[in-house]
Amino acid sequence: MLKQLSIYAENRKGTMQSITQVLADEGINIWGSCTNDGAEYGINRMVVSEPEKAMEALEGAGYLCRLTSVIGVELEDEVGNLNRLLKALAESNININYIYLSFNRDSGKPVLIFQTEDSAEVEICIKNKGFSVV
Image (cartoon, rainbow, N blue to C red; front, side, top):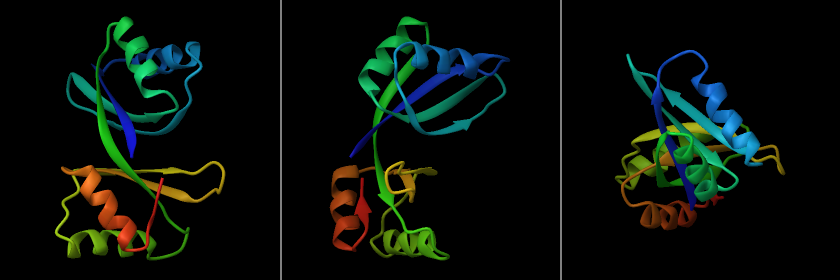
């Protein structure tokens, strides 16, 4: 299971660069990211190399952060594989709150990152259906 860092920040010019600068200064690598914006504030969700260290550094820089468990599933880069995974989740009555894509730097394969209510139970279900959890 992966830990995702959620950063709540003002929706203004330069904010993302400021966040990535903090992470770069700490030697933290961003493996995947998704930003949802709002009128005044946005949420940047990231899977990073050192989530606890990243949270500490960003909070020290004045950002409100939270760690959440998420699941990463490595898929073959083939037509229909995302649909196959989503169908397996639907058949198991699993609700996905949000998803975004990253990739495995070692294999070069896409990794679907998603958040659901009971990550540990869902991870077992996904493995039992033949998917590769990272």
